[in-house]
Length: 188
Image 1 (cartoon, rainbow, N blue to C red):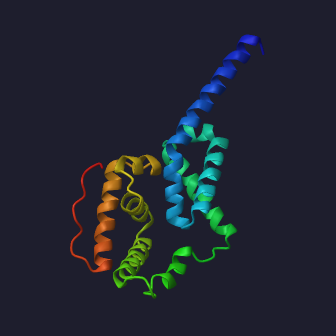
Image 2 (cartoon, rainbow, N blue to C red; image 1 turned 90 degrees about the vertical axis):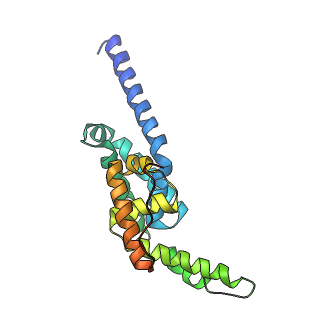
Image 3 (cartoon, rainbow, N blue to C red; image 1 turned 135 degrees about the vertical axis):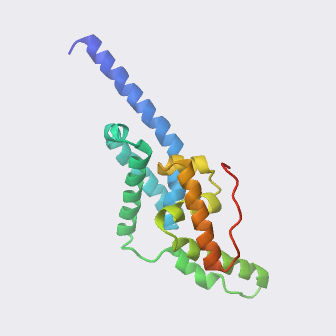
């Protein structure tokens, strides 16, 4: 290899690293949020997101060559979350441990305890949704992620995210005994 070829190879490698770095910065926070929606522990979610980004980097050329880099990378994130669950031996999620803490106890106003119990009911109902609806509802309504960000994170089209949100809200309204779900603004 000549000196010129080495310089061209180094430039290409540098560009490859810059593209990955940009991708990782854009995805990191939303990957942590999604992992938290499955693991209910911030440390585990951060670990899963970091492991996923490391694995994505290791397969970066395959990710870029795929039909949808976002969807390919999101699959790697899902696998990283499964691996964290395996290391936990699939022990119960911390959400189950919240049940005891939401009961009214001395010094906590009754309405605050009712709100905590309602939040637990909402989380339980969200966990019964099909995977994509659960992902979209959790990221949008719990974390406040806008529809374009959810689409970018999951590799889904924004219109598909809106469809999953609409179906998820309808299912939650039925599960929680509320009336029809309210309409959602387009892309906030």
